[in-house]
Image 1: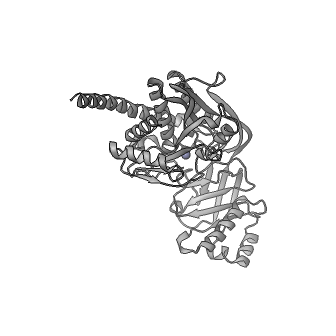
Image 2: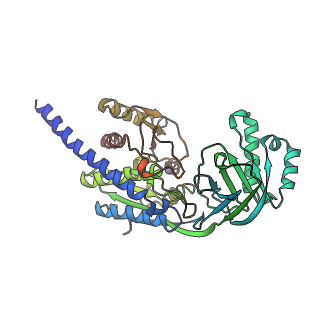
Image 3: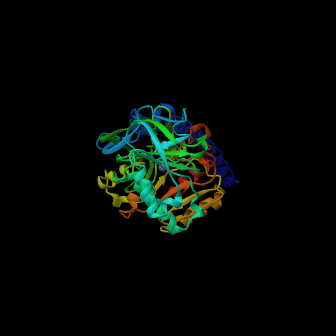
Length: 425
Ligand SMILES: [Zn+2]
C-alpha cells in the first residue's frame, strides 16, 4: 500500500514535470525556429541571436560557466546569401527555396544566358559530353532530370563525378550549371565559394522549355566569421565524472530575404531537449557533473564540435557518457541510436527502461556514423550515443522545416527515457 501510494505520488509529480517540459520545449522551439532568428545562420547575425537566447536560458537556470563566459568563440569561413536573389525563366520569377536552390558555395552572377541542355546519356558518353561542354562555354549548362534508380552503381558514380566537376571545377567553361531535378530540394552550408554558381531547379516549377535564364544571384563570402559554442554546467553530487549533453543550435540561415531555413526539427528540437535537460538538472541535482553544450557551425561541417574537442574546457577523459540530440522533433516510429552497437550494454539499458516504462514504440540500433557532432567525440574515444527520432514529418534542410508543423510527438517520453537512463549511470 505504502509502495503503491509512493509510486502514485511519483506518477503525479513526474506527470506534472513532464507536461511542463513539453510546454517549455514547445516555447523554446517556437523561439529558436522563428523567422526573427533568421534560420540561425550567418545572415543578419542569426547564429548570435540564437546563441544569446541559449545563454540567457542557461543564466536563468543558474548554470555555471567556464572562464566566466557561456561562450566559446571560434572562427570559420562561410559563403552567405544576404541579398535578394532573382532567377527568371520565360518572364516568370522563381521562388527561392520552393522552386530552386543555389548550391551553397555559389558566387554571384548577373545576366541573361542561353541554356544548353545535357542529358544523362550524353553525360555517360565522354565524347558527347566534352562536345556539350564546349558548346556551353560562356552560357549555362543544364543537366536534365533523371531517376537514379534507372542507372547502375557505376553509372551513378560517373554521373556524380561529372555533376561535381560542373559544380566545383574552375575549368568548367560554362558560366554556371543548372541541375533540373524531380527530387525534393535539400540545402546545405558551405565554407568555400566555388568558381561558378549552380542553380538547382525543381522540374515542377518549369512551364515550357528552358531556353534562357535571367539571373541576378548574389552571395557574400566571409573569410573570417566569429561564431560560438554555448556551454554551461551543473555541479553533481559526485564531481569526479561528467555526463555531457550536446545539440547543435545552428542551421542554414537564409537564401536571401525570400527564403529562411527555420530548422525546427534540425535542430531547434534537439536544442530544446538540451535546454529542457538543463532546466531539469538545475532543479534536481544530478549524480555527476553535467555539461550542456549547444554547438555552432555543425551544418558547415561539425566545426563547433571539432573546435571544442581540440580546445576542451575540461578533460575529455572525465566524460562518463555523452548524448547528442539532433532531430528530436518526431518519434512516431521511435528513435535510432547511433553507436548503439558500439556501446551495446548501454543500448540494452535504454531498451530495458523503455520496455519497463512503456515509452517509445521502437528503439533501433545502429553502428558508428560520422553524421553529427558526436563524431568529433567518437574520434577522441569518448563513449556516447547520437539519438534521432524517426517517423513523422519529412521536412529536412528545406524551407518546410518550420515550428508550426513540428509535431514533438514523443518529446515527453523521449525526455523521460533520457532522465531515467542518466539516473542509472
Ligand atoms: Zn542537424
